[in-house]
Image 1 (cartoon, one colour):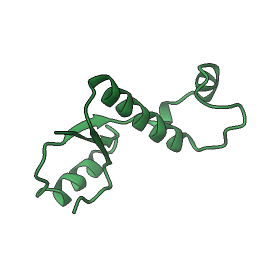
Image 2 (cartoon, rainbow, N blue to C red):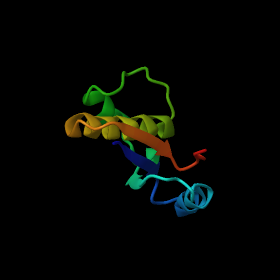
Image 3 (cartoon, one colour):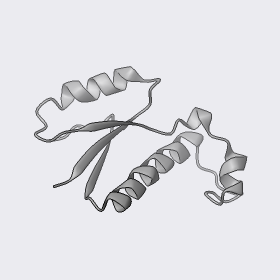
Length: 93
């Protein structure tokens, strides 16, 4: 079948609580995954690792979001399984 993962930040449990409340009727299993927190990102390290360019003007939150999705997609490839990635503000219908 497929995996379904929900990205959330540990420092915002209210967002995860709201996600769970709004999506109680989801008929598949959800796995909660901790997202990369933009407050913990070091731009220089990302540049040195070749993950961003020197002139990247994205917010740290946007970079954290992209890194979070990238990490889950890498797992999906390694596991050879389809994946749905949701964020903690999604409402599944």
